[in-house]
Length: 93
Image 1 (cartoon, rainbow, N blue to C red):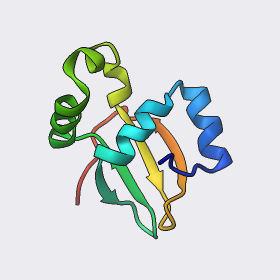
Image 2 (image 1 turned 45 degrees about the horizontal axis):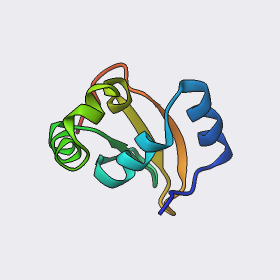
Image 3 (image 1 turned 60 degrees about the horizontal axis):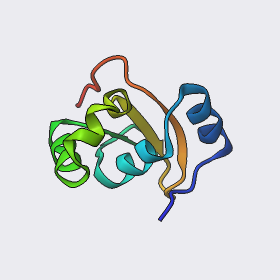
């Protein structure tokens, strides 16, 4: 199932070079953290990276390491609001 993205998220993904595979992997494997309001941030932590490597394979991900440093902001209705590259750790409360 392809996640529903806002027009803003589609534009940002193209501008930032984030592939549809990375977005699908985040939706399926990514860890979640509430971002205030009714949004959730999905990102790869150590546990989600291990699950992804187990299911997708190390060779596939070794060539696409940069894509694992991405995040999604998802609204409460499941729509992807925006996507981006993480430049620092996501601080958990």
